[in-house]
Length: 285
Image 1 (cartoon, one colour):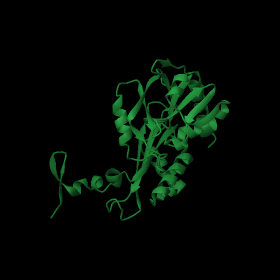
Image 2: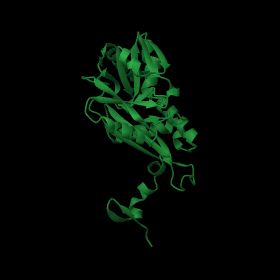
Image 3: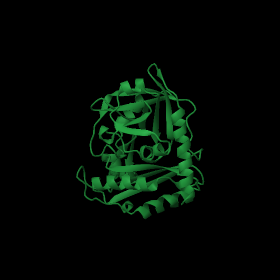
Image 4: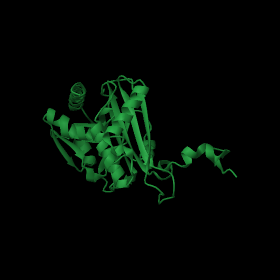
C-alpha cells in the first residue's frame, strides 16, 4: 500500500514528495552550504570556500566527494558553463547527509546540490544609499563550533529578517553576551579611530569569506589596521564608518545608527581595491 501524506492542504502520494521527505537538511538542518560569487564567468575565492566547507563537513562527520577540491571546482565550473554565465553570477553549493534515520542518521554519506544564476553586475558595486542599522535583541546567537559555518538551520536569521522588513534597513544580530556578532547575511566592520574593528570568531559570527579577504588582503593593500574583537552599541555610536561584507555583494555601507550618521570614504576605497584585487587575481590564473 502506498504511503500518503497531507501536503499543503492536499492528500499526496509520499513517493511524489520523496526528495523533500528524505532531505535531512530540510528535516534536521543536517548540512552546510556555500554561496560563491562569479566574476567574468569564473568563481571567486574557491580555495577559501572549499576550505570552510571541508572543515564544516569534517566536523559534522559527513563523508562527501566535495572533500576533493578539484571535484568541487569542476562541478561549479560545469554548471557555470551550462547556465552560460559569462560575467557576474551567484553559486549556492549545498551538501547534506543522505536520507535515513531520525536524529541519529543511518549513513554519513552526502548528497549535494549546486545552483547557479547570473547577476546583473559583473564587478562588485557599492550601494548608492547607505542602510540604517537596527539591532535584533529578541533572540541571541549562541556560540558553538558550528557558529562559523553556513548551515540550513537559519530560523534565527529569518526571525531577525522579519524584525525590520522595510527597505533600507540592515539588521544586526547579537550573541549571548549582548555583543554584536554579524548582519543578517553578512559580517560587520566598524571604522573607529582609524582602525577597522570586526567581531572575532569567538563572538559567534560566521567565518565569512569576504571578511577573510578584507582582513587578510585588502586591509594590507590600504595600510589599514584591523582588530578582531568584541563590538557593542557604543562602538556604533562612536564610529566614523560602518559597513557589511559578504561573498556576493562585497561591501555595503551603512548610513547611520539611531541619531549617528556615517561617511563611506573608506568603504568606497575598500570596494575599489577589492575589484582591483579580483581582476588581478582573475588575470593571473
